[in-house]
Length: 177
Image 1 (cartoon, rainbow, N blue to C red):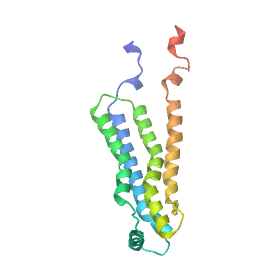
Image 2 (image 1 turned 180 degrees about the vertical axis):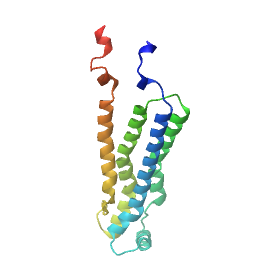
Image 3 (image 1 turned 120 degrees about the vertical axis):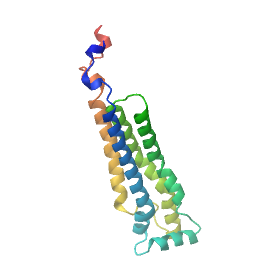
Image 4 (image 1 turned 90 degrees about the vertical axis):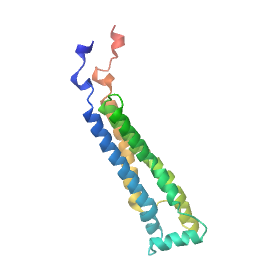
């Protein structure tokens, strides 16, 4: 019955909202850092000694494009989803901190795929223009992949540790009847 529910299960509007705000800030920072890595840090590392302006000009002369708008549009997907989740937590029915945290951790984990997708075109443009590898030349991609890896592991561990089944002793109540 209702009287038996724990205090932790009563809907709290504030904690999920704080989690959603923090999650949205993290996703936006991740996307911004990914954009700087793809459009600034990696080209500079790929062509040592050249200015960013020279690199972009050389890529354009070679008939290639760094695809700035495509990169920014691709990297805007994560923040767009984060903002949608924030609006849903803000205006929708009460939800748990657990659900909100797991959704944002999943978004950070998926950030690695978004980064790879967004960096592919510029990487190929650099490769074709300078006859180099299309992979990451800057080490600054590593923190993005590490953050996504930690978010993936964290979401799995947090999901298991906070699962309702585990809290009730591992035996689903239905089997006790």
